[in-house]
Length: 457
Image (cartoon, rainbow, N blue to C red; front, side, top):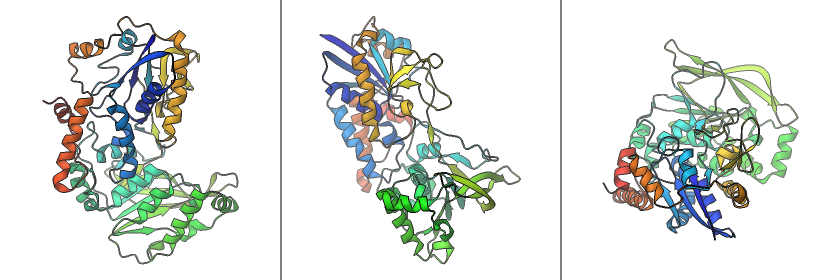
């Protein structure tokens, strides 16, 4: 029987789903899969891209854990592609590779002053509050008034984490250094800015509703933003999600805090719609001092146009949450404009000629860009896996496909890799750290500690 030795680079939901789908697919050959992950722990975006107070979304980890715990997929953690293992290495030992490396950089916001001190990307802040091992342990939380630019779920995550009282995060898996940083934050006002109106937002009703449930935080919305045009009225009438979002926002309009009319909380979360950021003003030291935005209005075609009316909000920090962007991989074609690996249904293409690159595939956000929820990743992986199965004629012919080759190669290079047993050790260690305090877990943050615990050292 034909054997397929497959490498998957990236052990987040996209990579794990791809492995699971391939192992369950009807096929005429044996499959063995090795999963490579640059971090010592698996689960990617679910572990390091979802706010710690979102246990429902983190429930996806349970499904991913079941796949890994079956034991038919080998995992090599703490292995960096392009550094510890290369494309040439993979060709020596596998028939094909799927890249599922995600999108973890921030998309840019090209406005004057965005380079000021106190201007941050959402992805970097998320990595910090999720205890990513490769970012600094501290975060400069010095601002009383903060702007968040964007109208998607990430923008709401950022705003919620900034406005929420740190003690309310204690039941979650928030790392100790993050709790200490947020506890000392002097923030009083968080402003969310979106170019479009309330009926055109990209966040989900669940995320929005959670904002209104924050303890000792007043929700501030502005009556002028709710003078709906016909397109907005039609969207509310025809789309259940938009209708629920409108209902939540309308309920906030009835609160005392609307238009700053007398809320009593120690912190305020302001939602500004029809607001297009145009400039970040700096103080004499080059620090963020204010956000200048232009009021917009609907253009009757689903977009917005500027009104020419400029407004200014004093702030001391700004976070841009306007999308994520993929990172290039050594030796793999990359589309710099869209931040993805160029591909046709997951089959990787040469950037200039659009010819297929034999044996190389992509899935997840590095394939399609940072769109869709985690659940969309399954159908995406199915498409890619279908091509892997059908492309048998163009698979690589590895010189040494033996399972022993990769551990020997990594050992020879002095790579301290972690495996599934090691992840179980780290997982149990984190859970045991949380138990005395009634917490789900306490994340181990330093990479060297993660590796030492995983390897039983």
